[in-house]
Structure formats: C-alpha cells, structure tokens
Length: 344
Image 1 (cartoon, rainbow, N blue to C red):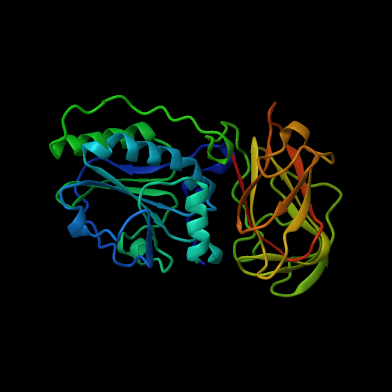
Image 2 (image 1 turned 90 degrees about the horizontal axis):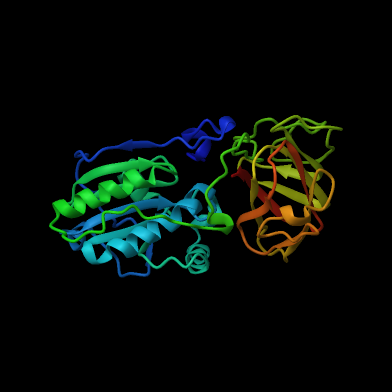
C-alpha cells in the first residue's frame, strides 16, 4: 500500500516537520470532486458550484496524527473566512483499510466535531485527480477555479493563511481581518514537541524497520516472539504469539506485548480490534512502571485502557523532561490489530 506520511516529509530524527509549499502561482484548474463516494456536512460540491469562491481543499485521514494536529487550523480558517468567500473542504482519503469504511469516517467526523464539508474519498479518486501524495495536503483555489497554492505537511500555518487572504482579496473580499489566527489545541490535536527523535514506525512487514525481537520477523504466519533484554533507541519488538501481515500485526493469543524505545513527548499507536472482536483491554508501562501523570488521553495513570474501534490512540504524553524511554503495551485479550507508531 502506498504511504506518504510524516517520515517522507520530515527528518524525524531531529524532530523537524518539514513542509513543501508553493507561492500563489497558477498550477492549473481544480480537478473535479465527483469521485467522492459520499459527502458529510454538505450536499455534493463540484467545480461548477464552487465557482466564484476561494476553496481550501484539505486532504486528511482520521488516524494520521499529522492530519489531526492540522485540523484546528482548517476549522479556524473555515469559520474566520466563511463570510469573506472561503469554502473549506476536507477530502478524507484513507491510508489504512478501515479508514475507507464510511461509518468509521462518519464517526470520526462526529467525534472530532468537524463542521465543514467532508468528501469521503475511499477510492482515492480525488487524491489521484489532484496528483496528491501526502497527508495532510492543502490546495487553495481562486474564484476562477485555478489552483494557486499548495502546502504539504504540517506547519507554516501563517504562510498558508496569508495565501488564503491574498486570494480572498483578489476575489473582491474587503474588510478582512489581516491578523494570523493563533490556534491553541490540546489532547491529540496539540502541536508536537520540539524534541522528537523517533520516526513513524510500522509493525506490518511491508514497511517494518528496526525490528529487534530475538526471532526474525515472519511474513503472514503465526510465530511466538520474545523481546531482547534491552532495546536501543527506535528499536521495537513483539512478545507473544503474533501474525505479521504487510499492513497489520495481529495478536493470535493473549497476552501479547509490543515494546518500543523512543524519544518524544507523545507516543501514539494506530490500533483496532479485529472484526467481530470484543473490546480489547491493555496495560501500558513506561520504563517498566505505570505511566502515572505521563499517561495519554487513551490510557489511565495505572496504564489501563481499552481498544473499542480502529483509530489513533494516544498512550503517552510526558509532562516533564523528554529522555529516551522504553514503552511497553500488553494486550490482555487476543484480536488486536496494530498498524503504526507515531510521535509528537
């Protein structure tokens, strides 16, 4: 499966989110939006119905931490400039298979309190029409339907907002508030720390790197794994009975563990229950102990939590100094599917 996440955009080992942007030029006509399988918060929109509006097209997917951290800015711009002629559209294009299910997208949009229109692009039709390769990615279209600006990745929000303002003025908007929005977010949507030395990492063998269990990683077959005595920075491994596929690592029998030696404020995992599974209980440890105040929004101070749906789970948010730490999650029930680690 194609993946274009943060590790392509950034040198994650120095904790810098790099972004690719273009100034207000002319990158051709806005492609059609007819490839959406459904629309949320709006009737279907088209190039014709949007003519005369400045349009912000935001490609995102709901388990991508980079997309989630950008959402408060998209929502803020949508509200601030709505009366000046801006239409913000979220194009939800899945990275993982479960993100292509409309019910999951609807639930995520509701939970995230997204009020602007969202096109469900489960077949990647709009993604391909825009020749996009990144989550998140923003394209700004002028009132004549021409793409005038793009930005790939998180960050550079002031520059993006300035380009939106420029195109709104070109389109005849007056009385614009020229200040740059100061967005404050907490929880999963909070901005990343300035000290991220761990890259996005995939347990599925198609993109697995730095695997350090004592046994080699088998493909598409059940195997019992053991963790080494110690892990070096950014090494990870399994303990217990796991089956590793190209995209998903699946726990075959409980209990089972995954450990990761990381350096970041936040640690997230994209996890889900296998279809038909009941909620899956877990326990998180940090350097061998319960996380306490360093728990994430999806784990308790004693490390406990449950996986009820496929999504991104924030398991660690450190409150103090950021050092190399060893994270471990033990699954007390079988049927968990692990997709990725991300950091912030």
